[in-house]
Image (cartoon, rainbow, N blue to C red; front, side):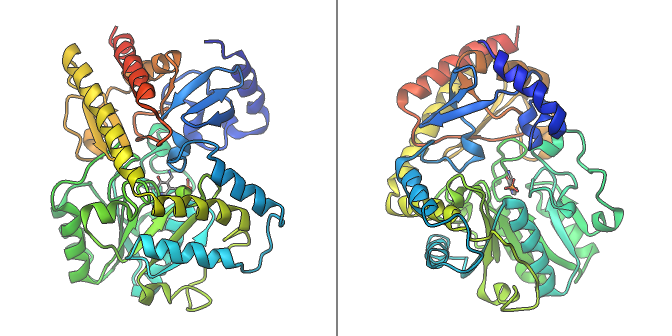
Length: 430
Ligand code: PMP
């Protein structure tokens, strides 16, 4: 595989961009080697600057659930572009998308658009604090909620592999209000709540974490969090930036039948454009300015081009529930195939799957939380990752990320991925 153009671009990028990339995980730091510079993508494929073509399982970290360059979304964007790129004034489409989100995710009675998942989570915590009059919040180790200061404590995703789970620049004053508990551990939450009685504003969680690899909630875990939050007057926030509109129309909260007070959403509602949103119970969302006293704003929020893309994507998902059945079948086929390969090779690795999110943990331990995820052999994962690229499959470049499938993946694509996995596991274990 010739990647000389990416090598040259990465070298050039070092001069003007920190680390050569605009978001850390893209730099391939945890898997080694040079990141591929992408020139285009279509359906299930990404094409790099050397014209190498990859079946890809990143899908922009979720939003490309319908595949790349979806003709309906592209057409909606092109039409919107003709009417100018931004107004800084309200538009009818913002109401359409708000109403659609409230319909698809019934726990959301009112929703505010922002420009990224980071903004969504930062704003949601501020609103929960304003609403409860309390300062502290509980965060789960290994969950990632964007790069807001108060979340960069034991964070997942790029923050793990960069080795700065407690990033310099985050003050002790900020960090002291973030309380930490392991995932899937109800006792730890009870302990924190008891030790900080009446001081906890919110509990924020990825209901199905995709930022420490993919981890599945134990039976009753999310329901127990709901019960504790009800008892203690704590705002339960589900960060569904990855799972929203992906695991089901109504996200993980629909799949597990647990209703949060607030939900944060991201990338997927922009269909690939930079969008995020937070919403929830009317009584809480009424605290947001200008309805209420908690300030939150954005010049480009509700951007007309982003709304056109997002509305087209969400309408499609709402009108075509069969997308989720199809994705689940494809996920099942891939997971089953991987398990058979692992069995045949007598490798004890873990495969986790939920709908169209999937991951292989390079460990013999069952992974139920961040500490378990950290028992993985990341060096072997790095070899595996590069062997997958050599075999034409582009995975997220870290062990601590979920893989995302799109409906554009064909059965043949899945067979090719399985063949690549078969060969790449051998390379990783040489
Ligand atoms: N929350 C979760 C669950 C995420 O996965 C991410 C990003 N991957 C974020 C928040 C932050 O979103 P963004 O990168 O758009 O700021």
